[in-house]
Amino acid sequence: MFELRDITKIYRMGKVEVPALKGISLTVNDGEMLAIIGASGSGKSTLMNILGFLDKPTSGQYILDGKDVGKLNDNHLAELRNKKIGFVFQQYNLLPRINALSNVELPLVYSGILQKQKRGREALERVGLGQRIHHKPTEMSGGEQQRVAIARALINNPSLILADEPTGNLDTAASADIMAIFHQLHREGMTVILITHEPDIAQQTPRIIRIVDGKIVSDKKIQPVVNHPDSGELN
Image 1 (cartoon, helix red, strand yellow):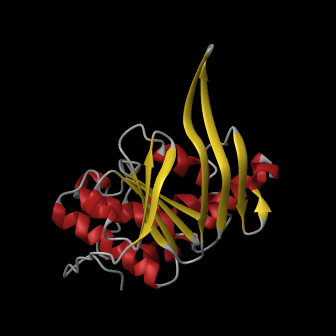
Image 2 (tube, rainbow, N blue to C red):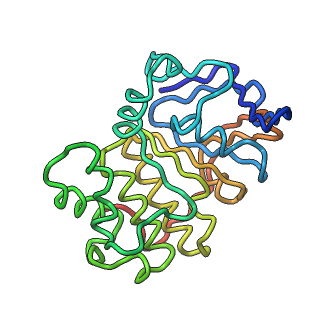
């Protein structure tokens, strides 16, 4: 699906240069599920931002479906990001004054797609929130808010889900429900990349990439340890 070739990212603050990524090379195939794990400041979120076209590398190549991403203009990147990538964040990033359905429909505003409500309802039903579509985020638990965020990420039928610390604000039971959803998406053929600092979350994926000080120090395939909660899976 994509390949990173010797990616570096340097942030400049006046005359000071702060390297965030130092020669990252990585290949991910269609339909993989993996975790990128590292401590705070390791560069894992910077890597996710580059994968999702939210930031650009200082040097190196990003090849996506045979195309050099570095040669695409901002409009092409925005279109590609909206169609191909679904984002899930630790803080949910929901608008508090509108209900779950309206939050989920937001990406469709930029896609020009009709039947927004139908698509939004279907996405919420996929994550087990078909009965909560009119509730606002402030009327939901953290786990329910994250399900809304996942439904929003799914609304444009992306091929890649990028999730940055998706269980960071959740308790054990809610985390298990959220991971069950990601595993179901993986079984359906979607590429799922989790950014995390939690070893128990990383160990639930078939591949773990560890980053330390902006470098990949290990890339291993494992037999994942998967919990099977009674709730939370996609229908």
